[in-house]
Length: 348
Image (cartoon, rainbow, N blue to C red; front, side, top):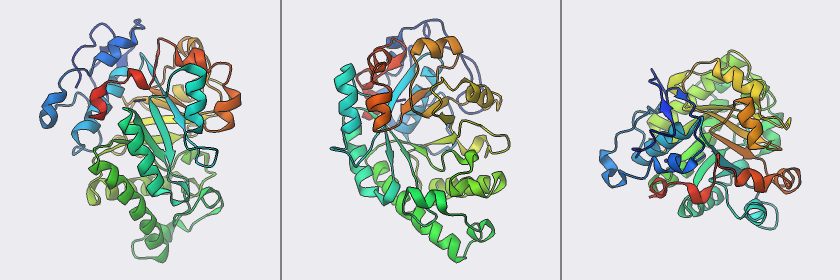
């Protein structure tokens, strides 16, 4: 997925937009080099940088604006590669080593997870990936008060108490958010933008953050957004709203509370059904395929008409076995952006 924009005229035709990124009219050109070149100038202007597209947070920092512009420019023409890491195999680079061996390349974006309160580890690996020139996206399998994956599935909180300031439930949740925010602040202070994907698959309602229904989820999302942007001044976040494959109606928190919307599915498709539902929201924001098991051929994405902003393969067996026969073709497609093809300005 992964950014000061001047020269993309032949590659992407841009339509005006009221909010967010705006709608991109898809070009017939497949020259991803033109897409990458679109951010190759203007980096020296730093604080003078003027974004083409509006992030939901008007105080977003310079690099975050550049990255968002890049994603908006690329959307509909190229897909960025992204890979979710695991941390319990032979090495934290387990998935990256598999991909590099199979394709000769590395993904443009690395997926990380604050699960089990691994804040320090995620910060360190994000810094290392940024040093390589890559982009970072972080999700969080968490219980109400922190902790890990199973808690996020098992807990069923009292939302009236959870969303009422001063209750034990509220205080426990906010305490865990404080820890995540401090980790994100470290990345902010290092100049690292995070594509932040909290409360993913909310409309599937299997995690606690979806079990209270759509109205409570929207309140929860907006509460985190306001605290993280206003109180913690996390101006390095691009907010990614991650639906399940169902993309149910009534769960959208509003244009002012997210920057990218997307969907997860493990049905081995290009996720076209979700794409159609997300497009119907008419947000003008890029769409992301932020979790998949098997990634189809790029030809299939083109024929289905759903070239997502990025696709992210899930970890361990999904990349080792389920995609072993198609990784080379996918990573070497003219429509796909890998780590070596990201503009250097995005990590400066």
